[in-house]
Length: 283
Ligand code: NDP
Image 1: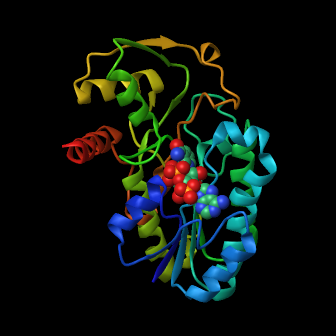
Image 2: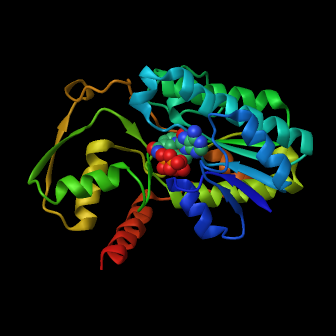
Image 3: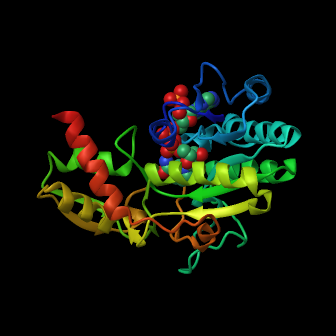
């Protein structure tokens, strides 16, 4: 049995679709603000593998609440990974492109030096370090720009704004790979299963949708596929100030996925699926 932390998030919901037989723990059953409670939950469930799909994802709020964000994103996965190491079972932790400083234009490789620009990135990096330090069988899967039919994400924000406006300004100087939550879920499951028979696959991996794109072009493709006549005007990030600084280069080298027989998904196909899910939900 696979135990999943998270029930309501974008990736957790896709995990539930793809592996309904897994056991899902929501905040009520395991609060990541209490790492010891998470460790206890694993001991009680006695699973064959654990996937952590829960996290503090409020990037701007983390700037003012770094200590609690670091408990949720750092100490809790650390505690989970230690119990998994003790029990000899694989642990899959989802991380982020925000561990990098966003410099250059080359896709980041898993072994490249990290340098988070803000509190959220630092808290997720603390999680990565704690998982590696636990010394068990693990995969750290860094991903970026997650979207799905659920929760809050860029696709849903654009659809909402694009429905009532003729024109929108969108940032053009941040480049990365939009990633369907569905592909993240499928990859986590494949990793948990592969690690069970082959612990040598332990390590850090990247998964983002291709081709790389900037936010403005991503918005244009959303409007094109959705048939919304909303014009997108490019702006620099300096014209869209946010509390947390975002990396300019979020391109990621995903070639390590081939060790699991996987490759980079095309986000444009993932977008089409999400739009059709949303249409189905509203009709
Ligand atoms: P969501 O924001 O959609 O969901 C977060 C989940 O974490 C929710 O289920 C939430 O539960 C749960 N959670 C938050 N705090 C706690 C807590 N204290 N105790 C228990 N559960 C908690 O996240 P995503 O599915 O988008 O993200 C999945 C992973 O991907 C995360 O590790 C994230 O850091 C990473 N990631 C996400 C990116 C993105 O663009 N979203 C980009 C790069 C990486 P509740 O509903 O109760 O709040």
